[in-house]
Image 1 (spheres, helix red, strand yellow):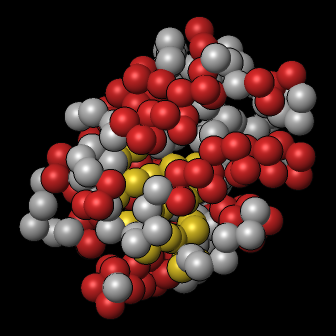
Image 2 (cartoon, rainbow, N blue to C red):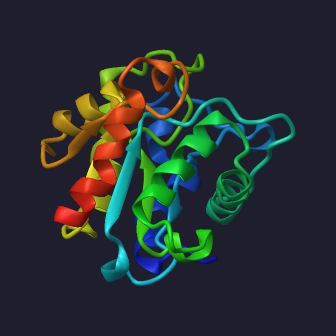
Image 3 (tube, rainbow, N blue to C red):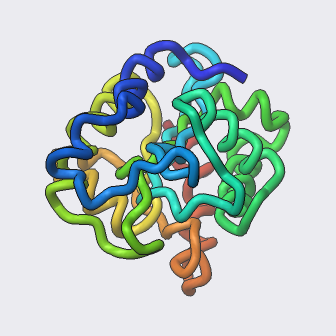
Length: 205
């Protein structure tokens, strides 16, 4: 699969590396040999007009053992592998949402209809830990809002309180709130019920 060129244009400056690492994002980690690069996005494998759904997560967890990267294409390729194989609980939960939206489509076909991304593209200093307002605002303005502007017709779903708060902080409020798909939030009461709303809202849209 290949990422749509318009999204490559938005995201590729993050691998220069991103200039914000020396400013508001100095707390974030850039260590490609250990998997620490901006990552966690997948989909948009066709025309942007085909995208019906945008899923916004909080930030990527810590890299998997042995994960290394050398740029945007490496990050996209690894995310493809992780989601396609159901690498961990997070990826399996997302796959269940996609299958509920398009049960008749293959994974490859679903990737033309969805864009999945992070409200902050780099891992927190501690997995599931906090990220400063300066860093979340910088990443939101530099990357997230520009991604969303490319798909104004799509249903945007913010998965978890972090993603919801960060979208509001950059002035984006037209989203469907749902529970986080990564632990621990995915195991809380009501999480799966909130995900079940996504295909319903998608059909309405």
